Image (cartoon, rainbow, N blue to C red):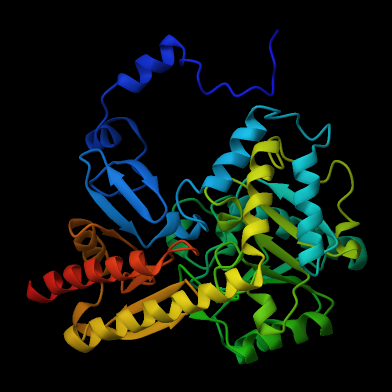
Length: 424
């Protein structure tokens, strides 16, 4: 008799799966068959574990990118693998016409760990921000009328790729040729208190900001700017949304960055690291704000599916631990010391900034607009990191549980990449 809970790992895959696995693909295949909206690395990852990736040729790479701050516990963490496999043997999907146990447990743990009373589970950071913005506008309309709809955001911010989210983000290059953008969105420079005060009025529904800008240049929010946002939202009956898609789930050395800053938002968005590599996101808020979102006002087909929720619950159990979060700050200092040693030798960094294991090394004027070239040099020397800003910042977001050995080896490879760039 079929047992749905039995381990099925010893069963051979169907013929069509075996045939698919034998289909030879290379980096050139991407250029032949996929949308050219990305320019991926020239190597093809084949497997990964911890903070290492191996390509199809067997070369290993230290992963200092973490899947763009996604792999909070590295590649193929045993506890996450176990949670996913166990849930896969029980139930994959039931839709939101029903509840499921992993989703409710995850939501309960998020409520217990944060300021929030209610959680909406979705599939990505973009969806989380889209839902948060919809909620803020719905709340403003319900309590103060439709005139109160304006959204304040910051230039060089990034909030996702759906239409409202990408329009709210402060990078025109992502909306060029796709206009007109939705009305009622105002952008101000990040960390500019005077500019924020100048645009606030009673028609503002919400301010959305990252507690630290990532894509925009790895700039931490100043205490004065974050405090002013909270003060002005309270004064004008607006909601403060913190986009913690990248900064959340231990990335800065706290479960969420707002906890370090003493500024509590009205709505918090989370994704990336909460799934440890499995697609899941959420936005969370207070009972009062959530109460305007009644049946039919928002929804998702896959959001809160049992697979994603089971993995995220396990991530939260591991990361929301005092000793674990303290270790993030220890690893941060080891990275900073390594960057300082590299800079003392090669003089390539004008600044190193960031929080926790989310650091940016700004290149000196001599290497302006060459961050992408440094990144490619990193690939040649078997280390993966990212870029940010106007192609002048090397961005590092490794696994939160990266070991000292992996940090030191990664830094050695970064140094070799830097030495190559300096020599050219």
